[in-house]
Image 1 (tube, rainbow, N blue to C red):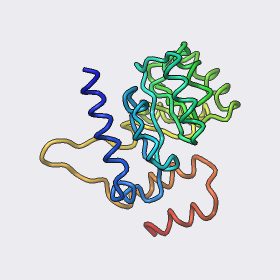
Image 2 (cartoon, rainbow, N blue to C red):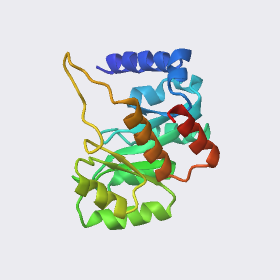
Image 3 (cartoon, rainbow, N blue to C red):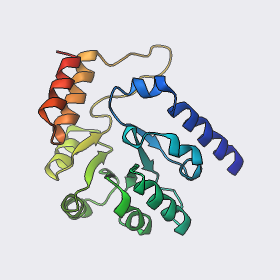
Length: 198
């Protein structure tokens, strides 16, 4: 099983370094689910750190070896997101110093924990992503708590099967603009986004 995981990681890394994949990002970073095998593969060093953000999954084993590897990659300016946070635990505490962003599952995390957690993380300069934003109420709650970005079915639902439908260009552009505005964009960033779809 470990050999298969390493093979998958190597295949993904080979794909990510291809020029056509990097060009498709059009200046936006790609969020990549980071398995342990992917993080320890030496080919990761060939990736441009400004183009990729690695999501550290809930089940990742956070031992001393992994933390040392993340410290080394962080020193090379790679960025990390702690994914699927529902509680404050050992994994969360050990990864937090190296994470630029935190994805909090707003539907599964205890409601009493959300205000405290968002306040502490915002004061620490972390970007908060509301995971599981499936309704207008979820969005309002997360927005009022100071979340910066939002992910969930409230914004778009996947379309499967033979009748796949693409999100219209204006709607996609609007979602990109909203995400950009959730941060503190420069005039140049706003101008570039608006030029893509006037």
